[in-house]
Length: 220
Picture 1 (tube, rainbow, N blue to C red):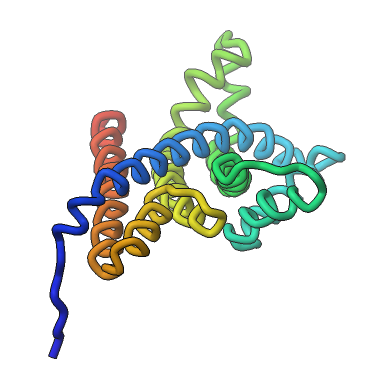
Picture 2 (picture 1 turned 45 degrees about the vertical axis):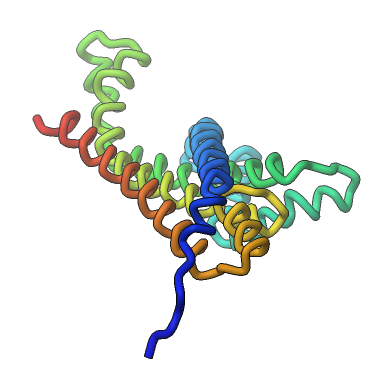
C-alpha cells in the first residue's frame, strides 16, 4: 500500500523560493530564445548557401548543437571555458549554452521553412515591382511564418525544460531552488511534485498562448 504522509505546510513556507526560481527560469528561457533566434537567422542562411567558410561554420554549430547533450554544452560553457581561464557565472554559462542549443535547432527550423517556400515566389514579387525588402516582407515572410510557427513554439518549451539543467552548475532556477528547498526540509516528493506542476503550467501557458495566437493569425 502507498504509505506516505504529505507535509504541504513546508512547501508553502518555501514557496517564495520556488517562485523566485520560476521567474529566473522564465527569464533565461525568454533571453535564450530571443538571442538564439538572432543567431539562427545567419546560421540558416549560411547553411542554406552550402558554400565557403561561413557554411562550414554554420554546419559545425548546428551539428554540434543538435547532436550533443544539452548538459554537455552547459558543462563546456561552465567548466570547459573555466579550464582555459574564462570563468563565467552559472547564470551566464547556462544562458550561453542554451542560446547555442536554441540557435542550432532554430537554424534548421528556419532553413526548413525557407525550403518550404516556392523559389518562384521572390522573382514573381520582383516582377510586380517590389524591391527585395518588400518581396520578403509581404510575400516570403507570411508563408515562412506559417511554416515555422509551431516548431518555434516547441523550441520555446524545449528551452524552458533545458533550463532545469542549471541545477548541475549551482544555479537556483526552478529545479535548483527545488533541490535547495528539499535539502533543507527533507521533503523530496512534495517539492518536486510542486515543481513539476509549475513547469507543466508554464509550458501549457506557452502552448495555449501559441494556439490562441495561431487561431487569430491563421484563421483566414
